[in-house]
Amino acid sequence: MRTIHRTGVILILLLLSSGSAWAGFYEGFEYFEAGKYEQALEEFLPLAEEGNAFAQLYLGIMYDKGYGVPRDSGKAVKWWQMSAEQGGAVAQYNLGDMYAQGRGVPVNEREAVKMYRMAANSGLADAQFSLAGMYASGRGIQQNDKVAAYWYRKAAEQDDAQAQVALGTLYDDGRGVAQDYQEAANWYLRAARQGDATAQYNLGSLYANGQGVPQDDAQAVSWYRKAAEQGNATAQYNLASAYDNGKGGLQDKEQAARWYKRAAEQGFADAQYNLAIMLHKGQGVSRDDVQAYKWFSIVAAGGGNDARLGRDAVARAMSPAQISEGQRLAREWLRRH
Image (cartoon, rainbow, N blue to C red; front, top):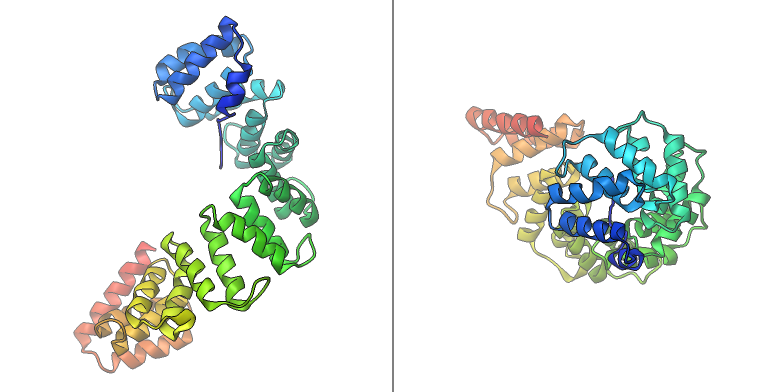
């Protein structure tokens, strides 16, 4: 849920007339931003009861998050409905989330679509992104990738990174739009520059395959690294593979083992398998058959036949005590994950 409350300080200041009501709202807003929620409540509540849409919006947020009041999704919905009925786009968007998730109201995806659409038509990027997602998944409305692409584009043009990734993916796959790797690369790049890990990984993949951009292993590795450092497991695996196989001018078994391990710890089966091999052979790490047995066992538990064969091969060089320890470590890891 991307529940938001910022309507833009500039917009608020423009709306603040000399009237005492707006002066009271501004005081409440200052208290809210400072985390002084009890004082904010004192300012917002009478204004909200008088019909001030901004005060109603912020009261809804306070009840939704439990800021200065007991957390109460029903009361959040109540105040957001009042604000939404006055055309409050942010309240409409937040209500859409509540209906989509069944918080404070029963799940009603059609009503979620209605709320998202109202806010999207007001130009709210978050609502445009969410409405696009409903069309893409067919939730609350007939599935339509073409309309999804329309709304993703609206949000993407406002620099919403998630919408840029989603639009890039549609161009990548040719869903709702004609397949166009160059357009995919363009949208991935815009999101990647904002630090979006998925976009960074996807852009790296386009460079690796020469799709929409010149084939360039060094560029691929550069983008994989950015995504990997943010915890993207697939990027970590691809970066490890580049170090393992010398792609992009790299050849470093120690770094390969390091990145395989990071992806392995996130449950990436291919990384677990490759790490097990490196541990058994002592490539980039000290040889450790107990750890190799552990990782082979974990992959084998997911149905990996090659991993089962690898585990059995490693076991032939292990003592019964070592095998028992490897089994224990594997069970422990699987329990945790």
